[in-house]
Image (cartoon, rainbow, N blue to C red; front, side, top):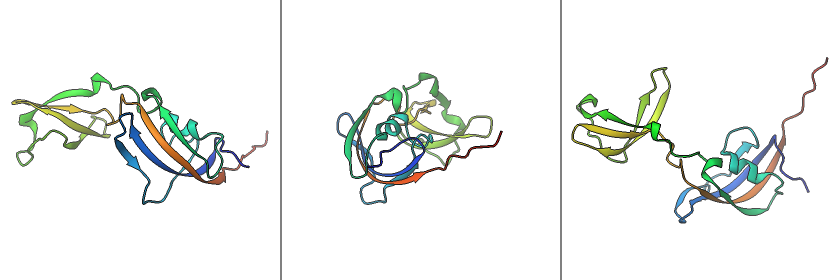
Length: 152
């Protein structure tokens, strides 16, 4: 049987949970997730967990934070003056906003605290610092990208 290797395009059904069992994402009721293994499209622990699997195989992956979204970085938590918010926006905990990094890149930030004179913004990915658990099923190995050998 064909086993998953780097460069293969695969289709996978998954159920992503935190270690306390709370679901954060699932492909249930949707098409399976399709991506190239080793292509950097998914977190490294998920990518590596597929290697060697065969179609129809199911497994549970326990992915430590450093192989998922990395540790939570305190340098990505900042205070923003509340008087700099547009007057028609009422900041609330949990609200997700988009901020510019000064170089034209947009970053999603989450309001984690509202103080009388400032709002605490967190630019960490929501799953940063968390160990993750994925129940996965390999649905299909769609094939590999062809190896191109260039002439000398």
